[in-house]
Image 1 (tube, rainbow, N blue to C red):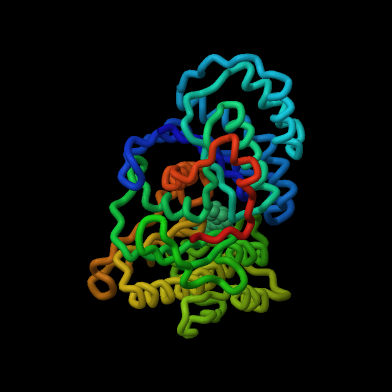
Image 2: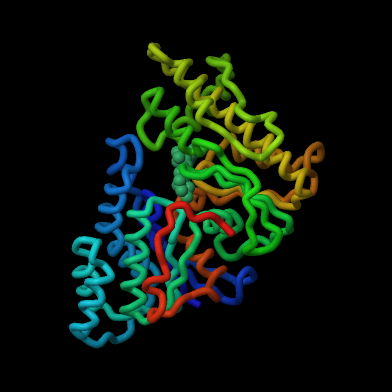
Amino acid sequence: MRILSIETSCDETAISIIEALGDFPDAKYEVLGDALFSQVDAHREFGGVFPAVAKREHIVTVLPMLEKALAESKLTYGFTPILTSDQTTEIYNLLSREDGLANQIINWHQAHGRPPIDLIAVTSGPGLEPALWVGINFAKALAYLWNTPVVPVDHMEGHILASLFDGHKLAELKFPALSLLVSGGHTEIILMESWGRYKKVGQTRDDAVGEAFDKVARLIGLPYPGGPRIGALAQIAREKQLPVYANLPRPMIHSGDLDFSFSGLKTAVLYAVKNKTLTEVEKQSLARDFEDAVIEVLIKKLSTAIEDFSAESVIVGGGVSANVHLRENIQNLQSPKQFPHLDVYLPDPYLSTDNSVMIALAGHARAKEALTPEIFNDTIKADGNKTLT
Ligand code: KG4
Ligand code: ZN
């Protein structure tokens, strides 16, 4: 089965083509084509992701990404008859809100024809709805042109599967498994009793971890997205063994449940830097202090969850899983003193932030739920607050 996947939930426009041999979760996969465009430059001047800007960027970039992924895949196209005026009208209807995209895709289709794709997977949530809709409408247009089924995919399920993927197959996961999802929009602990069965057992009550990293970065004058920059500064502080700059709180660390709160920590950083111009060294110390506070809380809650649910595996996913110090601390859980038999899964760094390979994997997991072009049109909708079930 060849799957074409589309990811437009936030500020990455990504399209992949994956070949799956066998059934989920035992299939062998080959990534035939993978194209990703990051919009960070467009969002930097606003200091964060603006939905309307993200939507505009996706509209401009999604077809070039399709072309790039298909070119990389070296798949050969089949013959395409000229579109009838009814078909052209349908494409204009499907892409009525994506200015100019209908024309582009009609011309492209007439020039190239249908590639040998068996299934289209598209992120339907969670994420920014105007951004999600671009991918969904694009998927619907392709499905209509190619007469190919579509499956809507949960972005967070994608992050989980990305962490289990070695480039060719998924890990043989031992259950119960716990997934710590940490991104710009999410901080949650998910219990998995078996493949495809999810239960949220903890979540943030306010800011997501990635959001807190980005906000703290802004407070000390670092450009968006600040998370990776905070991580880099913190590493320097550790290497230089710099003294503590601010004693920061560990919010909810003793709350007894598996929930999180990071807005108070961000406020504590705000007070620590108020009316001050930090030197480079002070910024490094503060970045380390902040990172230590966040990671201590994440590890404490995750450890409690491992005990509570007798978890055999831990999966970490989402953009913040690229953080070096978090990765080290997660690896350390698997130690003789802590959880000697625990399996730990972290994503390959290139799969830790948003991408479409993860959406293809989630599409394969849900392939049986695929909808045919005749019935999907009103069924697939963007759901910004979608939760895993
Ligand atoms: O999963 P992702 O790419 O997009 C969302 O779905 O949100 O996550 C992006 C988030 C941003 O907040 C970014 O600052 C953060 O992940 N991030 C990091 C690191 N790399 C990305 N945070 C801390 N350390 C990093 N190395
Ligand atoms: Zn994400």
